[in-house]
Length: 229
Ligand SMILES: [Zn+2]
View 1: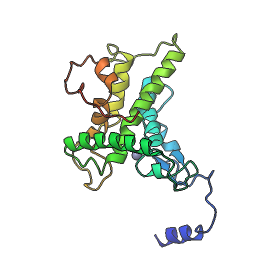
View 2: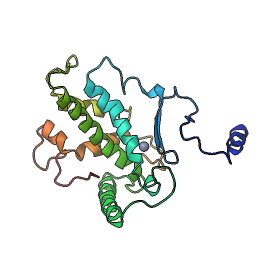
View 3: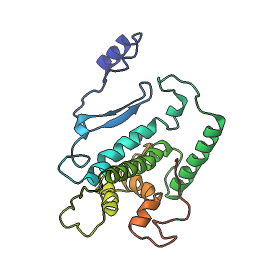
View 4: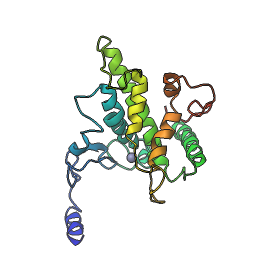
């Protein structure tokens, strides 16, 4: 602890190393956004199953690593980072109109997650990133498919009956597998329990209800949805 503190203090008046890579160990599976550097870090330890591997269908990689990349990118537009510009300098660069519209959209997420029985305000930053991250990953996957119309995505053994869209969403849920997805979460955590980390984003995606043909106003096809874009 003392050594860590001394190491930090020794860097105190040095210029920020903008192209540096200041992680403790890149092999630890982790990903994060650094607001001061305006950079997303994906550790090499993260680039493996269940998030990414070249030998599986693309929907696995987009729903896995793609979702994480989208999540981290969205932190750049999160409630904390919005007050920093592209150089990581604290500065208000949003118009009043954008800020108001954004706040209204955040209110939607707060209300939605409060409705799940968690603190929607405390977990807002991560919920917003979970939600938009999945949308970005899905859109990127669809864009990739449309650019390669002749490419036949292979099916996973035993799951041949599902469409590609269905497989994208099924794979996305597998990232949040937990022994007991509703318990064991620190009450001060910025994250919701694992189940909600995927249930909320899926409920907000119209594409899911289309993919699974959910009836109007069913649980996964609600009338009101929250989104940022
Ligand atoms: Zn996050």
